[in-house]
Length: 229
Image 1: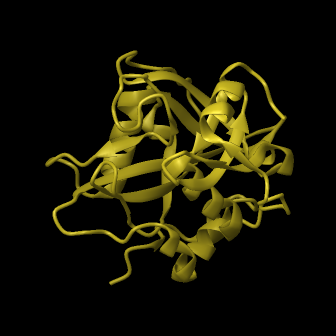
Image 2: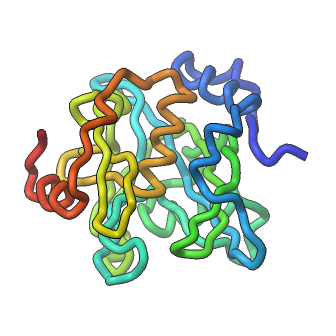
């Protein structure tokens, strides 16, 4: 049985979202091999990739800036989400529940529309299912708990796809991966990998300079200080 694909009929979705959802049915799984495959003994988790729209900026995505607690993903930008709980019926339940707990959004306005392939995050030991959702009726959001989240933000797809805001980052430990600059935020790591795939699947990707590789620490400091290249 497929672990990814549409959860609703794309025909009933907005014109900008329908092709994205339809494309999840026939993904080139070879493109996802940059991620680690799910492994035995890992804990299930899910993230909510919540797509909304505004008259001013068009389609956008909801992100959170995690609290700087010293953990594996502290201080990083992420999609709302977390580990599955026994009461969750599946990844959709997990993703929406975690998003409510972290951002305070009203789940009544969220319509899950597709699942992306389940992926392994070695540093945390989670097998993560990305859940695409349509923010049919956007509600106010906030950093519910300072212990978990510093800030939440809706970032336009047009900003994320802009070549001026895309580059790669390198860490002295050998890591090299995609990154995106947003006001006061640096999106990198697993979240940037997912975002890269979403832009490609959605047909939003624009040509950008993959040879622009920046030191991760310097890029993080620069974006945090409100400096954009």
